[in-house]
Length: 231
Ligand code: SAM
Image (cartoon, rainbow, N blue to C red):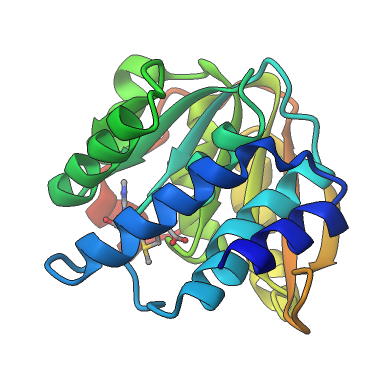
């Protein structure tokens, strides 16, 4: 894992200082995954590529310095925690509706002495009641289809901020289907960037949605409604 990580960080033009913390995080992930369902990826080399370097690649596509960032449906911490390890000026909130995953993340943060990272057990659509439009950036990977995901994430972003959705390169139709939701929620697509995870042939996509105006108060709706009737 160590070599793959270091080569990948170098290829991305990122400093290697975060390497040891990522390695320890990887060990905790592999160890805890034996007793708790955290990730389907168990091979350390694949964890390095498909979790750590995939997350790290975002630092080459957006300026995260000194930004408040919420990772919606973070699971075992992706992409938020690698971003924070590699860019320590990020003020990070990790949000997930599964308490056990948040317990794991609290343990990782304690071990890595990331005392200022907020690990929050909650649902995005409920979290928005108290944290509406309070983040510079929202990020999310593998949580829901884009029309649903936009309603979970865009209400959390301040006007002038961005929502960054990690998607596959064949997400053209999904993006097309989300156009109405994006506009309704006060967003506008500001970029679609495909990237390759270094050391692999895996190509992924980052969809950047700028928050151009406030989200109407009636959004987000309760999850049952979002799911039944996506915007
Ligand atoms: N983002 C991580 C990754 O890419 O490895 C985890 C992806 S996992 C497939 C989806 C995660 O989203 C789960 O941990 C689930 O508990 C969480 N989730 C789903 N709906 C959510 C919601 N409405 N609010 C917060 N978390 C949610």
